[in-house]
Length: 324
Image (cartoon, rainbow, N blue to C red):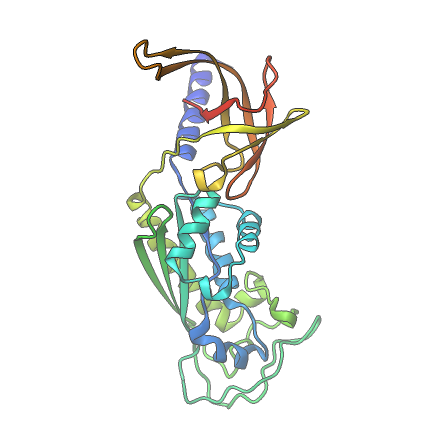
């Protein structure tokens, strides 16, 4: 490789690294769908968590655009389970801020589904579960009058430090096609048993309802991307102590509440001497040496677990701080 090509490659790599570091970290909550709950049950024949489906689709759109760094769903679900997060908390900024601090993200995206169904409110939509494998999306009891599918969603970006609403976005989707069944056009296999309907599937996207849903989600994602610059940058300075050491694994006395997150690289420092005021005996300064580094692997609200590396073994009481 020529010197010019090498420099070009290094430049591109550095630019990509800087861009990744500058991305705001966000997590997306399942959307609240209490307003449209009865309509959802009529459409699918049973209760389907369309709020989770909307959130999954929004995550896909945000990851695709690359403006944000979106936290993995399993990390969010783990924290939500530990905090006994309920469906009623989905649209609550205070709850969102608390979870966001534990995750170490810059912001949480919460939202509500404001419309989900037909544009003809007088049309009678009957029950009937989505058919199982090999079936077609059939909804019984639908009148013969054709109607379009319409979906409305609203999203808000919450500051994890203050619970303040930093930005909002709304999206409206309407199918280009009409039909007597919201799920009848597009067909295919699938099951809504147990509320586990996959709204990210190609089969759902091919229906007139899926068309409206995806249009609304894309609209919201576009607005959120444009608002990314409004999110404040969070520079977390972690400071804590090693509470336990066992064969290279350490436990810290600080966790998500203090801004620690999985993947963090923290310094381990040990005090070598203290400088005291000769008049009062008050400690003026502690002289420390860096003895190693910890990579965080697991975090809860008040503690964190990590892997230690260093020439000098770590011990209980050693100080842990953010990398300079």
